[in-house]
Amino acid sequence: MNADLLCERFGIGGRVRDSALRAQARVADLRYGAQEIVAANVLHAFLAEGIDESDLAGSSGYGYDDAARARYESLLARIFGVERALARLSIVSGTHAIVTAIAACVPPSETLLSITGPPYDTLRNAICDAPHALARNGLEYREIPLCSEGIDLDAVLGALEEHRVAAVFVQRSRGYAPRPSIGVDECAAAFAAVKAAAPKSVILVDDCYGELVEVREPTHVGADLVMGSLIKNLGGGLAPAGGYVAGRADLVERVAARLYAPGLGAALGPTLGFGRAFVQGLFQAPLVVEQTLRGLDFAAALFDELGFEVDPPAGAPRTDIVQAIRLGDPDLLLRFTAGLQSAMPLNARFRPEPGAVPGYAVPVVMSSGAFVAGATIELSCDAPMRAPYEVYLQGGISAAHARLGALFAARAVSG
Image (cartoon, rainbow, N blue to C red; front, side):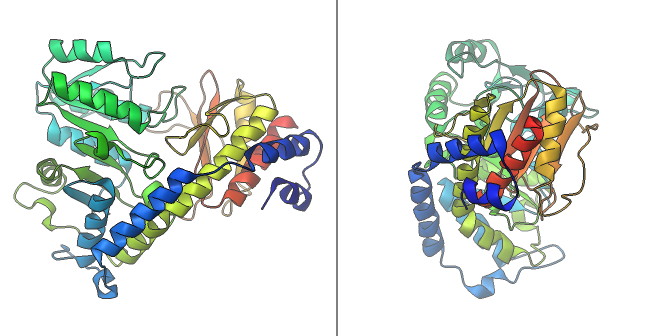
């Protein structure tokens, strides 16, 4: 559904319509070749796995011998090119998966080194500041800011010499901060340098928002573990909850022991009948990610035409499903989120208001009308109420809906 049709159907005119038509022309010829390769890779994984319908029945209770869980985790391992994956309903978020992996891989008195600057607010709070934070239980934490070229390898190598680093941490996505996302090629160079300088250090990657966006995943270029949420890219809009950890088998087992109990490991974890949704969501995830990227490219072009700074620009290589739009004014943030909310399939009549969010030092305003609560593969946005007053647009299961949301938000900020 093109911008002209959407503008006509929803009564959008004037400057916003003119900008939308120019934006549509700019993105009309974009090609998403990486998603074609990703789709072929996912198809290959499914055919190699050979799932039967009877595998999807699932289990309750302890979840022993849950075939749906076993098949799904094997699919993830194939897609990530790793020895093993752990994907469970009982991992309730990406933050939960990441913190569990850090706790399992970094012993007390040893160092976790973040080489992509401070993690997103909620995660940094869990590591450093919250009651019972990891640092309060003996973990040493250090971080190296990103430089103008991305990861500061000289500073990383210096820190590896100075500290006893058990694990190096990389956050690929920008999160909700004015910083660049990190592509797999940049990860590859950094991982090679880390492994050469500190071969025993474990490389942990927060892959949230980045899965299936590029042809390769961080695990294909040296990451020991990747972690994330199943209600983002991999869920394909169908997974109802859950998170995952994938990578080296010994590290996944350590995470399972931390998540459940030593000696029980990964033997527990019912799918409660949701195995079909997980597997089907993964099957259609490449298509959903492509639709998301198409919608975000239109939004980037539209807000650029309206005079706002956007990152990344339309048509630039993307490494995640987050579009930053610098509005520069708190009132415009509120108007943007209200406009986007009015395009949601659920709760379109709600008006977003800034509020406290655990882990954030400032109020956050967000728009969401997801069928799966909090599913950021569905169209949504988040905006911390702090300078430079950027809004972070994410997701969009259909490009048409993402375009409509961008148009409604643009009309709101231009009114």
